[in-house]
Length: 316
Image 1 (tube, one colour):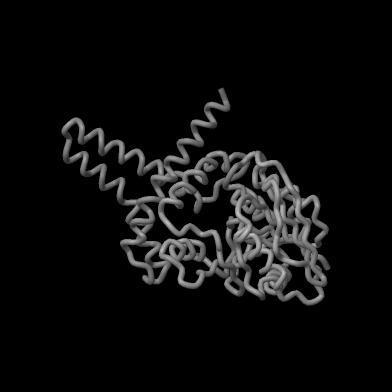
Image 2 (tube, rainbow, N blue to C red):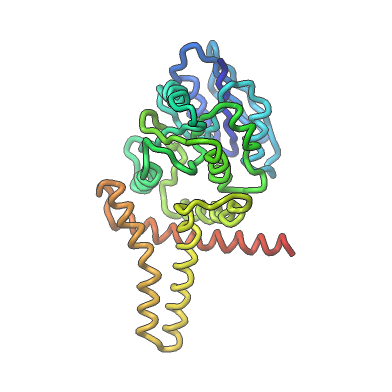
């Protein structure tokens, strides 16, 4: 039996090498591993050697292509009976493959499995916040999953037609939602991964969330939107509307209305912060969570607006 690990890559190689090393160090009795790295670097030299029963193949693709194209290209080259899509900055726990194979075979209707995120040693507060958000629900079926570690049978990828190459970001949510229409997707705490590339500072997070937000509206085309996903589209616009109303009302001298609009703008930040505070078992300071959302939501608003203007420009 062959398991193919497909890893799209661009940029630094240090975390990619750790990702590949974690794959080669997996416990995998009677399983052949092939690692396919699809890079957009002009040159890539991975300082990780093949081991018996494992192979590493590197493919170069133009920088202009989307991450979905890289994943789809890798899938076309893969020989595996089972497919694992990984980001190039994750370190898998040694039991990851054994657990994923077992979970996928446990339920006849289960079509995709994924392991939960774990904090790195001495993780900064931003990483702990991200990990808590990723693990808000574990050991259950979900309607969409991030693309950092996705494990499935080959036929599952074929049935949904791969990843959506028209999306710059949010492609994993689009893909996994399509997969969820075939059967259940299980998010497990029995194995885990460390997100090596997790944002360490709010400034870098702000820039990335602007970039991620640009595909928000594009990602809803061609699929149904689950009720749980609706707030991610509406809340940033809610905050923007009442923030602008706060400024306008204050400018025209309507102090009471201005303060009311400010309250309505802040309410989602407080609500999300309280929820995360509970999800994290109160192990993260509430003020740090507030700071996170005060950066997160403005970035999402900017990203969504940029994506909207790009759509209008492309349409015209």
